[in-house]
Length: 490
Image (cartoon, rainbow, N blue to C red; front, top):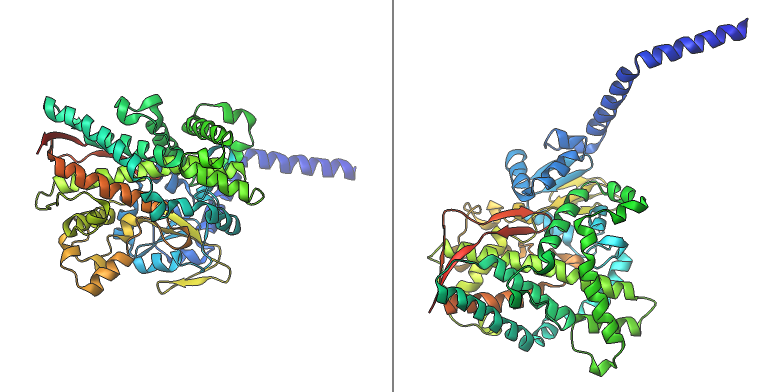
């Protein structure tokens, strides 16, 4: 009889549970959200309500294609420190950027970076293990030095001649030219020469062959969304069929195949017979240190160089052209040699102002606070917290760049005192900073300093519609489209 009673009681409890299951689950879910929002030291930081208990707010921001605009608005509304995720805060002051990026401070990369290359092939950008990153960087940095980059001058000049011949055609015909696209073709081909001693032929073809540039843009856009919730990437990788579904990341094997093709060609040659390029340097580093730098590392670094380098450089050149052409008071010299371009005050002021106002990276850069916690720009942050920086936000700091930091004004660089100039330059994060500063910065600046003065020297340029800036979409990089201009030979 007692057993029957217990059975009836259990049945009654089960009946009550099933009857109210939905209500119980809703209450449990709400309690979880409240715990996430309030049971943390981050509750003291203001920010978007939704962001305080779920990463879906960041997913929504990333999917908008205008992440930089949302994060600028967040800091305009909530101040210099804002909570933008359950365990993430964002800083607006350049001083915070210098603290976080400073070498040796223990701010390690987060899982955000792990989703940007397919098939778990990690390069300098996607490697978050500090020791492994340092090892890979040791073998990767030498070919990116300025002296090494300058050894490619002849090949880059040859590409420049082809590029200018294509622009000449538009000038002679008097038809509008999408200058942004052509700058992207040139950037991609330049990376091909640098990485593989063999350009891809985009300038020759005058089109995005095999939709490769668009594919890379789509891939970084997809990855920028998924990176807000990295566990989704880990989960999908565990599903075998997922890797066969169509996506931008799968199509990146176009670059993988190119890297593999050139690598196989080089492996069949003696060292002295190989053309000088990034892949050759990486292969030689592997052959000298096969246990520390394997063939997967060689492929990953060479492949990553193309996607990251072409998009970021093209973005900066596109922004430069738009701002200079829509601000006709910004004169440019006609000297085009690299070392001479560095000495052109107006050109360099324009370039710095463009990199300040529209840095190529539009997504947040994230780091994890080291053990023991630390103070960032006067604010104590507990260990394990993710901290975020965005160049579009940092570069609009009015204390550093002036009350007009939201607008293009190259005079800030020309009229600044030596101390003010030094502070502004220390507060530019176009290429990141610290031990994770972009290794391709010398190549990017070399190409920009050779290309843009030459273009403005050779042509009078007029924007088709100066009232409408190019459209854009931010994945990781700020990618623009529609810089239509008329060209006239000088």
